[in-house]
Length: 615
Image 1 (tube, one colour):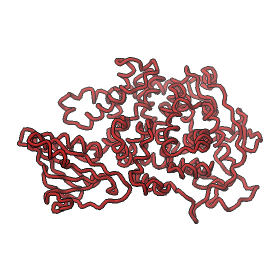
Image 2 (cartoon, helix red, strand yellow; image 1 turned 135 degrees about the horizontal axis):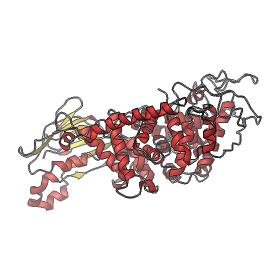
Image 3 (cartoon, one colour; image 1 turned 180 degrees about the horizontal axis):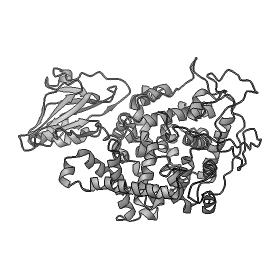
């Protein structure tokens, strides 16, 4: 086999070479000659210093290598062509993105698959739909679909390369089992890299998540949002869950929901009693219109039932032979089966391997692939479905509620991660306004990009709260009160609660990741909802809220929003805000100034209310 080198990483910072080890050549003798094609040594060099490389340079004689050797960056690799089965010995042909085709690597006694398996530690490969002999690099959906793999089965280097190459994949579970070697691996073995400034880490993550730009320091000319007096934060208390009796009192003789805004306010303040969820969630998610009659809803349900089973029949009628020729459907099924088997079994609804609930999860997710074939299935979606199916106890209703929820959440699962980038940047903006000192501390520990919040945002805290608590949290968020992007304020509330321990114990990069992950199942949902609500009240009452924050929270109509927060405002200036959940003639309001506000003004619905991230 010709010697080959592969440069792995966007900046050529990691070099992987396959070569025979000199010591092994010396004492393997004839035995080695018979198995040389299956043996290579992985030489991993990790550092943040750039290494020059030449793509497809067949004439390089560096280190005395054969003139037929070559090396290339894995970021330049476009595809790998394999030999046709049963036609001569194995070979691989590497094609680069600039259409340079490198000389074939021949494996006279087979085992080229071992090289492919090694490459898959660094890049995602999938079959070309046009030619099964060709493996495409970083194909659509494949990289996203690895979200819940156990990354720590790999050496530290493999994990870090996945973080650099595919942060979506690496974050979901990889950081949830963080150990002390992670940051050491990121820093590399070069002592000069051990005291890197926060800005360098920001650059590193900017490469990992293109488009994620979070300022690491204040610069002249930028809007300074760190010195604003937000005023006193009010104390907020929550009410009891809305009962079935309260709900029934708000339904007219034809089944229409009366005083919808007031009902949403009550749900926001206290959630729903469990007996009511099966009805109310269909309205909150938009499956049923709030102004529909009982008869109209029955007709809609019949129509949606027919539509669902037609889609289900599509994938149920696909034969094994047809599925073999449809790689996307085959991949979706494989991923769904993996995810369903990982479903949280602490809830009795999903206990047991052959539990009907697990079978329904599988069927609903497969049907969703027919409903939105372009997005298909990405690991993590089952986390969003399982509570819905548990509450609905009905396959059809669960599907349409899930489809409505995915209308809100689909940006999180798209390949370019635009929704996730936007939310991380918005969260950084909000946290800096609330506590610039804490933000500065996080930046000093290379954590200012808030990467540890990725999982919270991706699946809406599903893995941070108990099963029953997540039912409460989601129904509160679905009211779309008291402002746009309330889930970001929930993140701020959690981080504020942990600030003291993080700063007093001088947690570094590793410790912050580990600490945040270990909060799972330990957060008091009612306490966090109170804190997040109080933060929203505090911001709504602030007269100098920066324009960027107004836009994040959907307060664009504010006349007091300042393009530069260093410029003062008239103390008597009126603050025009959309009405919030706290402005009701039936619910007492705790305003930031401590005064009672009984204004009956109601919050207008935003035309883009279902989108949690701006377009």
